[in-house]
Image (cartoon, rainbow, N blue to C red; front, side):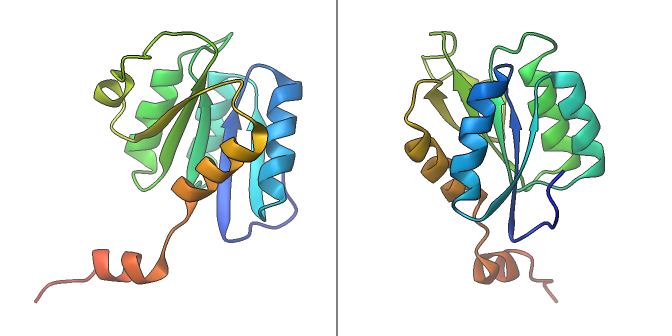
Length: 139
């Protein structure tokens, strides 16, 4: 668990711990607070107890369903965006966006870590001016 949660919070759900740690380091360089978990079960647990701005989600987990994780995120944290990563051609037709309303990107697992970090940072950034405007109460 990170020491202190900063402005942007990310959850990485990645079955390959070494790859997940690599992505974590690149995100931390952008001052993103990162939690890394290896399974859908663990992701479902932390989603219920921690808030995230963006989730990096391995589409093909060794245990559990990535789509179940995305569904819970949509329900519990509707403002969180999901960036799916995959090393397969499954969903390469873009249909992931029909199955997960909070999906913002589908990228290859082999995407350079700096590029993935930039994508995640983009989708995790919350513009306070936009949020204030978006959440205005109408008379």
